[in-house]
Length: 234
Image (cartoon, rainbow, N blue to C red):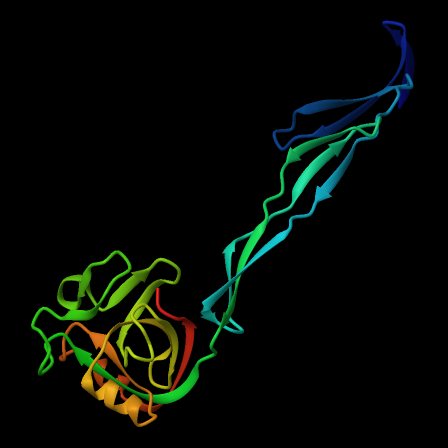
């Protein structure tokens, strides 16, 4: 290896030249030259610091939400600031506060029975029009709209019938059915069997289907279903 000391524009430059020779598969010789250039001039380094800005959590309280139930309304995220060598701070990204809602209402956890019904059940209206109005003031039809409902907070949920004196329209209930698993449902309907059961101290809810011929309707029946209210009404 040969080393050459040169001066380029008044700056000392160290150039190392490494020559490697080899034989290619074709039998031709080739050479490869590698240049390593190092600037020997000393320069001043600036120190840049970044600072993480923590976000706050804004809490609101809602009596329609049972005690012990907390939901996140908005996710929070941290911000970032740049601090220069003179300790001046510049915001790069601002933090966003988290928003949570804490329930202060009545707790409601029950174990009761569940059955299923279709829009074409005996005594039901042929269109499957439900007893409750939706949040926007319209009546819901199982035949036209299907057996799920898009809630403004909980997204797509199943529809159930319950005693409206205890579980008002729009109540969100987490259902744990041994045969169907765990899911959220909204109270949008009622029935005489549900009302009679509650007067006798029994929780009985009816899970809605589009038709009585749905094969899953038979799996719905259970006397050991857990109900946990997540929101009282709309």
